Length: 433
Image (tube, rainbow, N blue to C red; front, top):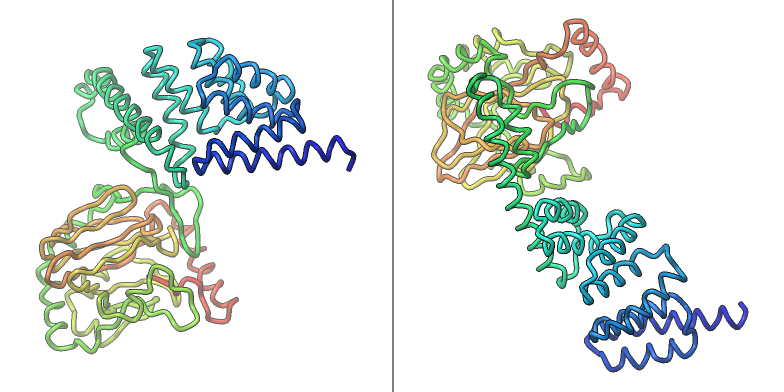
């Protein structure tokens, strides 16, 4: 390393020390250290930028401008230099120069948080609220799920408030734009349009399918399926009282048949299931398990068995169908999770439902009501709550995904058990219904 390079390295180390001191509120110490860096390498762009930022903090805009313009002249590829220079231009009320500097920064680093926030603020000062909201929205997307310095919190909160206000204005505008067409078309079949609007307005998140074992491509990612797709649902619901009566008989006469639904062996990472693993807080009374009949249990519940036999359940060797009574104890939460494959859907028929029971699939949460069945894709994140002081009981079973053709079903009936045959009986499918 030659002497000039050694001097630059030394000066840059001093700049880092000065910035740490400034971050701890040691202004005088920071200035002292930075003066040493300037004495060693006064023309280095990092030194010029640091000195310019120091002058900016002190409100000395002429000095800050001179130093920062020298910094970008020597290193025009550093987005942070341009952001600092934009702040100088703001200080001297040169909006055009500020905008140009911010555009330079964002060309170099399109996700630069400070540049996006300052650009939004510039638009606000110019009375361009819509453009401000667009820039603030971009900044919020960049910070989602990240840890930010506390100093940025007020700016982020302001950005979020501007975006919310803009979304409300946009909603009002679009409602007016769509009103005539909605009246002409009627409300039937417009649920997806409503969801599209809610996503646009930031009110709803789209959840994707996340099977833990088998993903079948090109199947729709629907959270709750429309009732019209399953004409047999009304008949299932009509049998609610008969099925509930058989469940209550089980709870009186055969509680030994109940077992923890979550029952991972030692050595398996149980993650979110730690609290419920091998716990009676969520228990099951199986009627069909991994394609096998629970003969004694079905004999106790003949009407339930009769109803299940009439439904389009998959028939996959050693895997399906599956059906069970699910009992969730008071004050119990089933954490967010996803199922094993989107080739099947899951049906819930609530049987015993005290107040305070909820069920979420993706972005939609429903109140659980006795006798009101639904069909959902369990490969989309879902969870359940029993906030009551009583047990909640549901009949749960699987059906083929109706978007599969008969040929696809026949091949899946061979492929799925083929996986467990390859693994000599240890099927990844066995992790869940």
